[in-house]
Length: 579
Image (cartoon, rainbow, N blue to C red; front, side):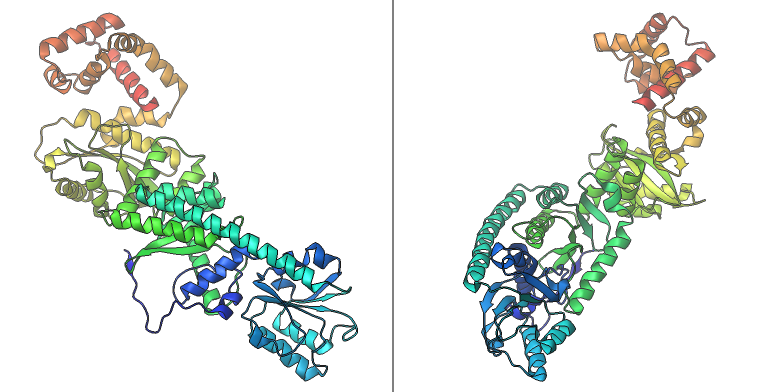
């Protein structure tokens, strides 16, 4: 369920430069308790400003032999500006984020005053301080050094005379050039996601664009940390493995950093909420990656706006979840995954437990319904177990594939399936008699799950035309031959048998656009009742009998021979399973 967020009293969007400077190393945006304007300013600085470490690598600084005495951990702080000052009373002249250059001429000499001076610099949120050793201080002042160490204030000394004007000129030129590049990059990002919004791009496409823009994996998750869409950059197993736990840990780290007013490390995830009109639907999460000129958080925020606009345009409140499940099921059925572990992690991340569970494939058909897939998805709660569904990509309209996760030893009872069928019929506004539910075998892995789904789809073929008053439920246990064939998997000997038995009919249909395979399928579904078989094949009895005679002639067999019928039935089942 989405969350509705109000606005706390006293909240302001006025920038807070001191706090922004402290947060400039990139605390991820997670929402609560974070001044948004200050956050944007801090992230902007992180994206476009040089760090102390980068300043110390400039030729104008290197020639003066810099040495970092304390504050090594703070060298990745962004430098907003360079300020030259010789007085100890400098704090009222800075805004935060400055790198102070000094020869120490106006610095105090007594230890208490030096410690107080260092404390005031920290309170002013300067990035760091650089002291040129010389006549005033041939050695670093001990009291100031101890105070800087205590406050973890980066303190650098220069062992040779420095041209402060050259250093400030080099740093300021870098800052201005980077800011111009950042502005151009932000304009490009804004234009990109505005176009995606105007074109009504789906969530998975927007997420894919974010991942390619940032060059790192990006995940769209809902408020319960279930994955809606992912751009894994070709590494699904690493990105989605145990996603829920890792995501919760990342959110906790972000909340803790904000509560402590702390600076987070460069390896933390970047998290922004997806929300509009006071309603939050989820989060857009970027895993660690290379910096972006526009700022990684700025890219995510622009994408989150596009996602929120798309969400507002969706008519169904569960549209994201439904389309996410469709992509997963279709990827599974189409074998569009890099390995069993990757698709298992994808299913787990979407909220369908796989490890230590029994997986069951269902095929649901609502005859003549154009909303069968949506009706099936909206009725999954009736199963009483985690489940995902999708319109079956290779079956007739009105057919859906469902994956159900059961506890070990669990079973979908006829009562549960009947309630599910009734809910599907009601949601599809169809008579209950138009609903058929086929149940595959229990599986404990991805290959078994695929077989279970194929069994369920195969079960629909012969049973769906039965005249009945209520929904029909069939199980793979009702089809012993199908169960036996699926136990062989994709054995090439079965494929060879299928080709040997059916090749004349396949070639005839291909050359003449015939329907002999369909006629044979109907005949084998009702081997003892040619009238029902003719009805199932949508042919008159006379035409149906002519087709049967042609099949016998092409194959050189008699369909009155029970062993031949069994062999043909096996060949047809193996062919459909292989396809």
